[in-house]
Length: 229
Image 1: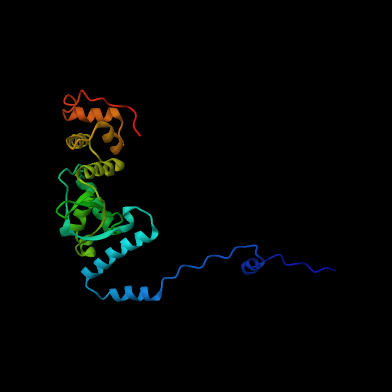
Image 2: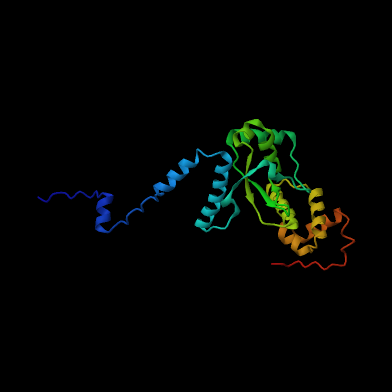
C-alpha cells in the first residue's frame, strides 16, 4: 500500500526547489549612521534643524523623485511673511476647527513658500496654518518656533498663480479675489491663454474675471484663442 504524500510545502522548500522567488531582504541602515543621528539628539535645537534640513535635500536627491514635498524644511517663524495679495479668508468657526485639527493630529500639511529677493520666505499657501503655529499654544509650543515648509522656486507672478491654484483646488477661492489676481497677472504681462492654462480656467471664465475688474475694455482688441496646449 502506497503512503500518502504530504502536499504541504514550506516556503523554504519552495525556494530550494526554485518554485518560489526568495523574498527581498529588508534594507538595513548602517549602524554608524544611526549612531550619528542618536548623537545629534544632544545638540541644540538650532543645530538639529540645520542637520535635518540638509538631510531632507540629501534624501530627496537619493530617491530621485522631483517633488518639493520630499524636501520639507524647518523654518523659523521669524523668517516667514504673508504675501500682499492673500486671497483666501477663513471664517472664525473654520479657524477654530483648524486649531483643533492641528492640535489633535499635528501638522500634516507643510506651509508652501518661496524666497523673495531679500531672502525672506513669502507664504504661497498656508497663511492660516502659520497663524495657528504662531499663536495657538498647543501647536506653537510643540514646534518651538519652527514651521514645516516646502519651498518653491518662483518669482512674484508665478507665486500669485500658485496661490490661486492651491485655493481653487480646495474650493476656497472667492470670485472677487480671483478677479483681482487675474488683474495682477495681466499687469505682469500674462496673456489670456497663459492665465487660463496656469490657473486651470476656461476662456470665458478668464473673460468674466477681467470684466469684473474693468479690464475687458482695456483688452478688448486682444484675440483669444480657444485652443492651447
